[in-house]
Amino acid sequence: MAAADPASAALLLEACGDKPGVVCRWVIDTTGSVGLAEAADWMTGPVTQILVVLIGAFLLNRLVRRAIRRFANRVEGAAESGRLEKLRARTPGVFLNTGEVNIRAAARAQTIAAVLRSVSSGVIWTFAIIYILGAAGLNLGPIIAGAGVVGVALGFGAQSLVRDFLSGMFMLIEDQFGVGDVIDVGEASGTVELVTLRVTRLRDQNGTVWHVPNGEIRRVGNKSQQWARAVLDVAVAPTADLERAASVIAEAAEEVWATDVAKPDVLDVPEVLGLEYLGPDAATIRVQGKTRPGAQWRVSRLLRVRIAEKLTEAGIELPPSTFVRPGGAPPTR
Image (cartoon, rainbow, N blue to C red):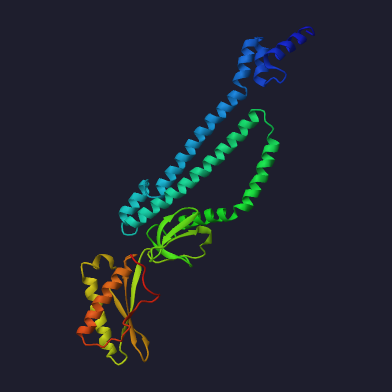
């Protein structure tokens, strides 16, 4: 028995080397075949481990990306459950989806899904590469330490970039604004042309394009979400018959609301709020009406024209500065 031990040790060393694996040791002890032990050692060696890790990472990445894609489709309403369809059929008014909301939800869901796919792929392949380097026999200690130092340095240098991405994620999730909305973000205001995770691009009424980092946006005033309001302060002479002037303005607003040009964009009947300002130079009467988002400026222009015509026909005296829109001139649409 003692004489057989050196022979077994020699076979083990010949087949599996100085660091034999569990499978190779078991095969050589069971069969005594060097060829089978070498084949088993190769099949469970670093090359096979690397191939298994690569295939596993590829399959896991595909599964995760598919799950994220299905999640995005559900968010944008592409895959509804049977229970939701029954509920929608019973209460159609509550669950009615407008085209604008669907488009915004689809764009938001696809943007978030793209980010999640990128993050998941990065995490999966990072762990796969680390395991492959370890299987190849590399010492991962210095590599991980160096990567940690580089990560800390990049983290300090890219704080604003990380803040921009996080702010962009929250803006998309909360649906604060979308492409085509007219917004005011402080120093810049205008129509949104592009929304990414890092930057928002606006074009103001003068045609100037503003690139605003999302991390710099502290507050957002959305002028075209869900519904808007056309508001006009109509100035007449302070000596005019103010009650009659208000009646004429109300009649003019109702005529504009009934026209084929304005009817698709108005949502509620107009109302005259009454006297807004009274001074030695003029008296202003405020009129307003609810419109679709983004249509308030066009409806306001129609109101100005019709109110001016009606006041002139009624013989109501107008001061030199007739119409004033609160907050300044509207952006060009």
